[in-house]
Image (cartoon, rainbow, N blue to C red; front, side, top):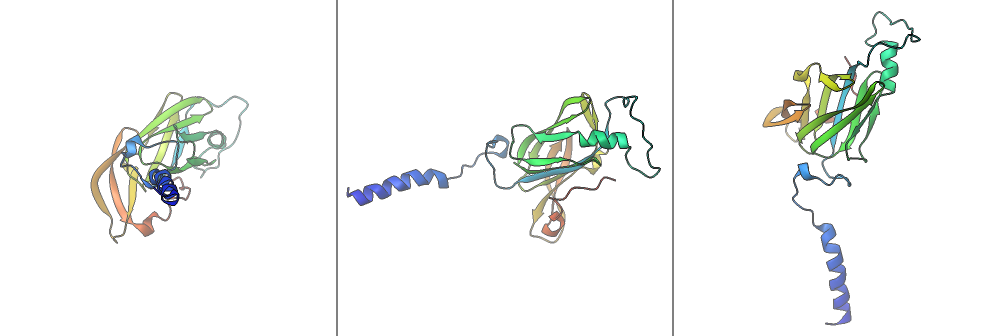
Length: 198
């Protein structure tokens, strides 16, 4: 074989594996590298219930405020992350709102930590690629979480169509089965925005 052909064959042999993507299941995704079809996870904490505030904490809550200054301080010290997905980014705001971006599809475990809450985990399963998962109203306790209104959990994926429709598939969020909706792309424009707690 001529040297030029031999060199070309070697280059092709080295490059070929880079261009071949496997058909692996999202539940068996490689957590060490970014995958196509990133998932966003958004929502808010309604309360961090880690016992009574320390006696030195004295503050007056505004009559129309959704949260007390003590809860706001707890939210500021709360962290949220994904188990074994170091490249996912996000955080918690002082109003309890949270966001996680660039998560892989499939099965995920959310780690939640706060003052008085060493580690509480929430599992998400069967989350499709490009989904936006919306989880409003989480109450965080030292050893568990509660989703206060599970009927308001929403899983959306974009479609080129102009109408919303159920896909007939379900994801699972914190033990609750949730219908997956296809929605027009324009409705997904908020998927990278912090949600506003109500």
